[in-house]
Image 1 (tube, rainbow, N blue to C red):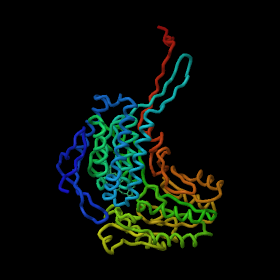
Image 2 (image 1 turned 180 degrees about the vertical axis):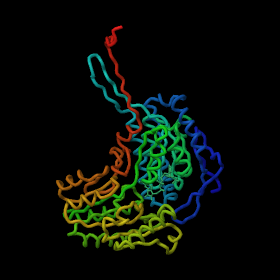
Image 3 (image 1 turned 180 degrees about the horizontal axis):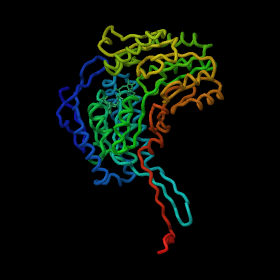
Image 4 (image 1 turned 90 degrees about the vertical axis):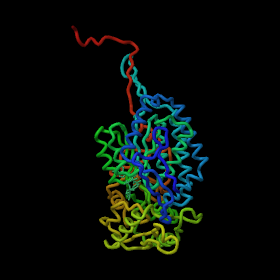
Length: 491
Ligand code: NDP
């Protein structure tokens, strides 16, 4: 425990220039269980210089796709080999149940393998543009990429950012959340082990206000990719204007999960629970607004509450645990404040609503699965992203009203519809202003499909070929195979 975990800059494990360290807390019991070095802007600058040198001078920008693929496959194999260690690290660090972190680790393996495959696949286009002229469009890496991730999926978010960036041939300066740095440290040990050249992958740990802000504003970083809150996303966008960085923002949501009366009742109840309480509700795409058709409202609520009360809340390492603690005391307080606001604004608390204070759970940051009914569209709990286990239920009568309510948000990340009428399902989804949608399911996410939002939920897409392309520049090369004088100037 006394050992201070280091960060990885230019192929070396180093402590920060300031020598400061940060305590890492287990949210299940509030205890400090690790110490990590605490970086600052000065450390980011060193990492950026290394990443820039590795890209331009050491030859990484010319590394063949097959070599980039080989390294990514090796990373995937090593993650798979260290799966139990990695899932335990994320469970201790984040609090989420082991069954979730095991899933995250397996998804991270898939993500590295997917982008290893993508690296060697065809990219680009060719056109016959004019007589004897061929236009070729190629994709090239952008350069030095800064990447900033949150705490809700520590390893998986790292995979989503790092795998496509490295597949496309960029170098990276990566910042995990200050509260969940441990699986990132292990991941960078894996990068070192598989043999990434010096400076290609750099890990800088520290606070968003210092390390994150420097990544966003640094003039030698060519792209910044961020996942986190919309407020932070806005400040990153502003900071990135200095050198007009390429930006990718995956931000918050207040996603509607819409259930029509003709839906499979038990299926819809099951996914309504999963949509909001999976990962303790700390999911950007959480189905945090449940829209129920009036004719099934009462029966649905009754069944939903009955099942929500049975959710087993506990410490993440216990095999029976279905829902863990929130990430930190301050975040828990924020969620509890939202619950108070919900009550004060007149929503009806149907279940939960409190911190769990009894027994061992009282030491951690546990909040009961909470459901509010009788909400109105103007209520704070209906409008703002709570990022916790709090569901706001809304009632509608017609399809038109459902779509109006569903789209009545500044966000546009995700949404789902449950109905057995396939025409209605497609009609509804096509009118939904959101980037990630589901019909008769909620939450499944695939490496192959693009992830990102409309409106204030972000800019750009992760995953799939879209996610790869986000890490490339596009260059046109026009070649004539019968060169001729222009004849434009006569003198
Ligand atoms: P943030 O958006 O603040 O944090 C996400 C990442 O950004 C962290 O690594 C953080 O650093 C970093 N960061 C913070 N400030 C800056 C900055 N000025 N410049 C650059 N990087 C910065 O999320 P929070 O953890 O504070 O949560 C706040 C709210 O954001 C949540 O309540 C939730 O509503 C939402 N959120 C949404 C997520 C999503 O996936 N859509 C994920 C996480 C949060 P640090 O290490 O200091 O935290």
